Length: 176
Figure 1 (cartoon, rainbow, N blue to C red):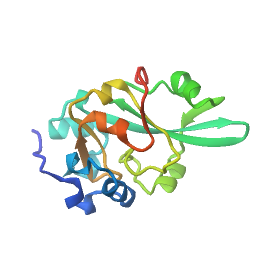
Figure 2 (figure 1 turned 60 degrees about the horizontal axis):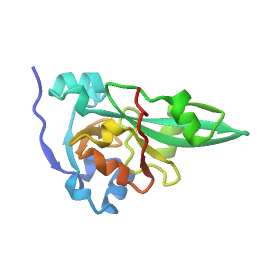
Figure 3 (figure 1 turned 30 degrees about the vertical axis):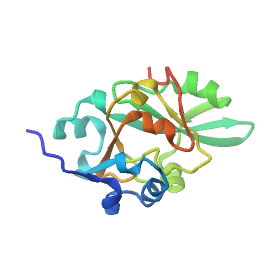
């Protein structure tokens, strides 16, 4: 049995957004195209969410934060890939970021730097210096489900808008 989702314009429900997500949305000219739905925080992980709410995996995208290291310096980037794929961290991402080593950012560091909850990380509202790399499957999706910055809700928006984030860029082949 699936649970019904109730959608709202995202900015009309700031309590369903991380503080950084709400602030970033207010600055985006296309914020009116973003919807939010409240979910059970225990069902925020993609597979559980899709099963409980009747959303297909192909409509969902995961945002992972990558820590890249070169010469003792660490930089961060977000990768958005379809839920049916995984990010090519050690190949394409590492080369694109021009780092020696790329790995998933430590949970405690990522949540501290973003002010977002693990399992709800979203590219909307990340630190401005972080590139947001968007796989072409996500960018071409007419509607994509992503995190909201908290585990208690999800965002819906046209995928191409993610490449229009201030630090957004399409990276074909990101998801493998």
